[in-house]
Image (cartoon, rainbow, N blue to C red; front, side, top):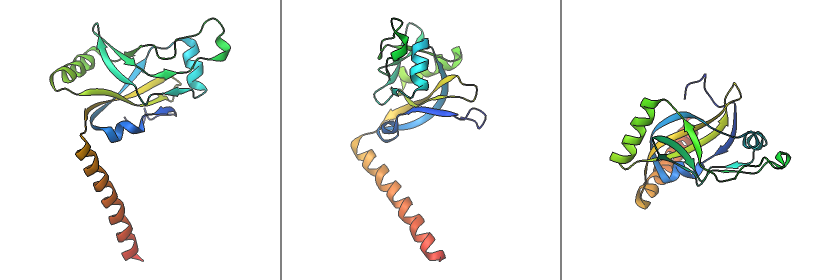
Length: 157
């Protein structure tokens, strides 16, 4: 993500994805939403912890993302876990679908946010699942970096 497209207001984060997956690449994609979904997102009622993206009929869809019903929508409600179409350029779409099919990678949403113009966007990651021992190694590496920083700061005093 560039500085110009940095998230203005984060609605939902998938923190578990950074632990469960080795992230190879990130993309900013648009999402097709209904009016009640946008209002619910602006109120902060969303969860993408169990969400993933999948190809269907030549398009990419966000599956299993939870956007709560908006109480003021009355009879124009939306289904909270419905598949939502993701918007990206055709070349990017074909490249992502190819990597998912050939290299057994997964498309995982990391962030759901409104950009500076107020448009809902998703930061989608092309990722490969980590095994249990890889997760443990990542934790050890992170703790070692933290400890090393502490030691360096103590030496400077």
